[in-house]
Image 1 (spheres, rainbow, N blue to C red):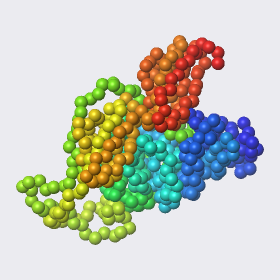
Image 2 (tube, rainbow, N blue to C red; image 1 turned 90 degrees about the vertical axis):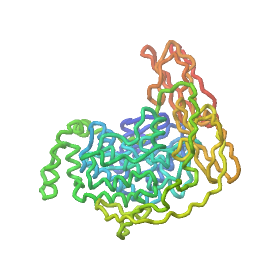
Image 3 (tube, rainbow, N blue to C red; image 1 turned 45 degrees about the vertical axis):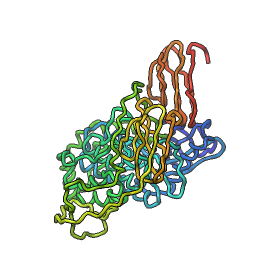
Image 4 (tube, rainbow, N blue to C red; image 1 turned 30 degrees about the vertical axis):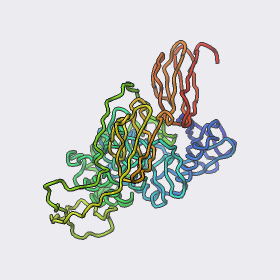
Length: 549
């Protein structure tokens, strides 16, 4: 199929989502394959989708790096809204990880360094990706590692396009500050790379959960994993740097991707695989090359690579194209009972002033370190290195803590929800009393297991005053009811199975556009696209599949 511009031909559809289609194309003028990502015409006029699409184009256009998928063109004429992107033959890091329990340490570290290299230029340009995950990392058949899908990226000179009440990012690879609606910085991306590296090395995710809601709660309550308990899976020399990348506080992480990358390189300088060896790893067919001592050492080590035959089938078999540049699809999960739990109001210790317990000494041991160079320090001035620094316990008097001015927050929600402020669960609505907090601004997170999506609202509390935060959670989610289907159907939302009719269950999704598909093998599929904005009521679908359409 040729486009109006005769130079570009769409040769194959790769993927399709509710709002966009990704094509393999060919540019005859430049004699090369391209990837074409197009918004469906009926949605191209929607301001939020257009803003996100143009944001992705601007983010990628600012970058020119071998570890970032390149953009060639943006087309916005009439109802056309398309990105022309670099075509990458290979696989995704997700597929690579899916077929292995763990990646060899040298391969995992090399991939992590390549991701950080691409992010380094993005961070220097004022761009934070905000949604790094294995699906958004491509590994080409030539051994190249490339970052893609900047659709959620934040640019320092552009306003945000996030809807109020919603969290941006994928929960399994989300930093605590994202879950709490806090400031997104380069340290947020560094945390995501740390999560990916941990998963490549150990074969398990840091944020585990049976549902999106449970995973999100684990992000809110996140505590760094104990790397020493991972044994040989996480090389000892790498643990200090990986631990720094996975710190809960952004201020304690490496301040940028460049700093984190330098830390990984310094921790184990001989661990990086040459591009040729990565290519061998993917193809399973080592080429005849002049053997240097370094390559000989790696080849001796890399004999287990030949065991990964599934990767050979993936990459060499069909030249799979996994660009995953389509818009992120929402996760669907089963609802839970409407039964309201008992109130679990807890002490809000994070917001109380610090006091020395009775009978405790007025001095505490602290660690004093010898001076270190400044070229590899985190944002608190600590050096990230695998070398153990001398530790000299000394005693330092506690600084007096002044009592801050406090105010009160009254929280009311419909339906009931667990309420988080920062990383603390403060209770379940209806709360029996107001919450005392320091004066200031807070992001309040509501979680209801039936809805299954975190909802965040801002609240400003003034000293001595009571601020009332009242929210109808249903205003911030899409609600769909399959009221009647004759004779019956399996219901899919954005190609994900949800339920089989008859069912009275309400389907909850994020605000935006979703494709509903009803499937019964005796009849043609019924498909309908629904768009939801804040405050919309429940949308009902009534269909007789036997009637011609």
